[in-house]
Image (cartoon, rainbow, N blue to C red; front, side, top):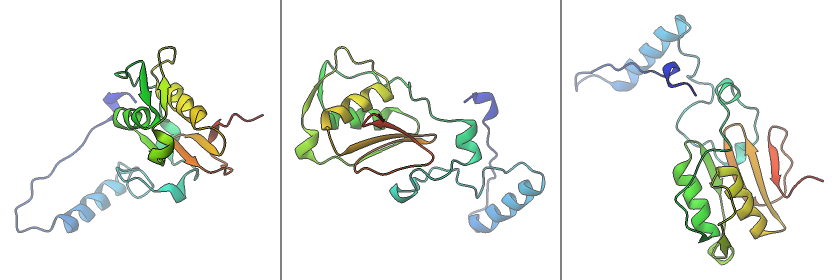
Length: 162
């Protein structure tokens, strides 16, 4: 995303004023001006939850899809699956959701020849987890779960489609 397209407006409120009432007034004002496309259409800091994975991308995600080659770095030549997944989640500026039990995530991965990008590391971890695990790439991030589900708006990275 080009940071010159990002901005914000702030309003200092007296402690006696209700923030939510003023927020509604400001949103209404800027919507009338056509300057508030992001509000109320799925863009925001909240993780929508696993049940909404693969839903149709909103205009923000269509305009600014995640960088699957986002550099992660900082990992040693060996790390557990859970360490790799936690590093990806901590370093990427988008959704990276996974649910891996310690019993399966403690397996050690050799990373010396793996490019330190979100996609490459996630694919390496998913492959090490093996059958029954599904790694998906969506316009708003990645998911890794022990499941096999079809998604209309995602790309299945693991297992590879045949």
